[in-house]
Length: 122
Image (cartoon, rainbow, N blue to C red; front, top):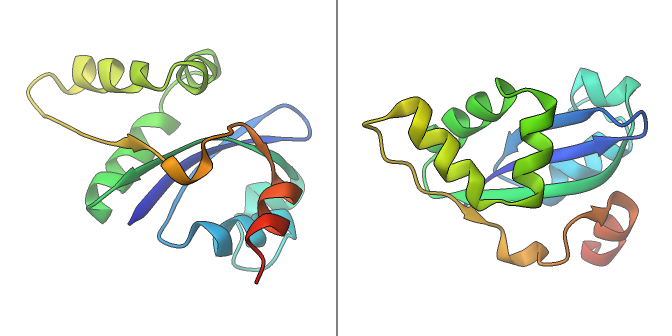
């Protein structure tokens, strides 16, 4: 399973990323580990706003790239209405079909990063 996600940082900015291991990636972002993104080292993530899953890594990367190209206002809209992402993506890519699912493991979105990490810790 591949994950595409949007995080809200402490300064109210949004970060979009992609990973194959959601827990490990969130841990790296939150604690500023070297595997984390440079951006989240200086803009500490506060909560996970949305997570989508894809079967293919290439689909996850295309989706991440597409979301990163959206203005912040649109990113905020798709976190409120995840189905809007399908409409936006199809409008832009007209003939390409794309399917992603809102992650069922995180039904209570948004979720605070600390809560997510402590909930899944073994």
